[in-house]
Structure formats: structure tokens, C-alpha cells
Image (tube, rainbow, N blue to C red):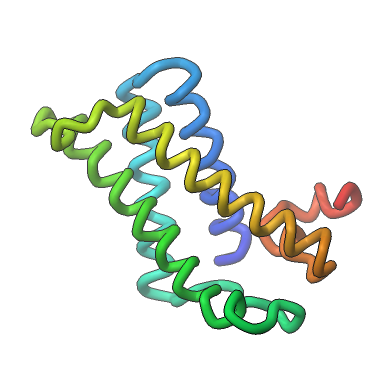
Length: 139
């Protein structure tokens, strides 16, 4: 159950982030983004990281993997928090929300590239861990 919920939140956050960039900052979408982001962070904080580096990831990248994961959660918490603060009318610390979402999406893209590299170059099934089972046939 946790895995399916986390996978759903993972892809929901990405989709909502893209919608916020493409369609402008719409309060309902921004609120949903913040809720999903905080839910992902809460699951990680209370249950721990769901996946490790995998056996094929070695050296410095293996050691850095949990730190990079926690870094992604920190970015998500910060982005969700600034979004929620702005929605409550308390400002966004002078950061325009579209810029915040662009920077967040840029960091997300680096995260995605890393996992695409793992999945293809190392063949460790990194993408299978975070995609719905219905998509495993095309991976």
C-alpha cells in the first residue's frame, strides 16, 4: 500500500508542477501540489526512504544516494512550504512562484536524468521501482 501511494504522489507532484508552470499559478493546483509534496515528505520522515541505491550503484554515488534522496525531499518541502505560505497571503519570501517552480522542476530533471542513467547504463531497474506496474512492459 505504501509503495502504490508513494508512486502516486511522486507522479502527481511532477504533473502538478508541470501544470503550475504551463498554466500559471492556479490556487487549487498549487494547494494540491503543496499537499502532495508535504505528504511525500511526511512518509519519508516517518517511514524512512523507500529504496536504497541498489547493488549496481557503487563508490561515491552509492554513498551519496541517501543524501541525494534527502536533498530531493528538502527541495520538495521547501517548495511546498513556500507555495503554502504564498497561498495563505504571507508572501513567498520575494521569490516569484513561477521561478520557484522552474527551479524545482530543474532539480527534478536532474533527479530524473540520474535515474534514467541508472536504469539504462547500470540496468538496475531504477525506473521500475517508481513507475506503476502497468508501465513496466515498456521499460
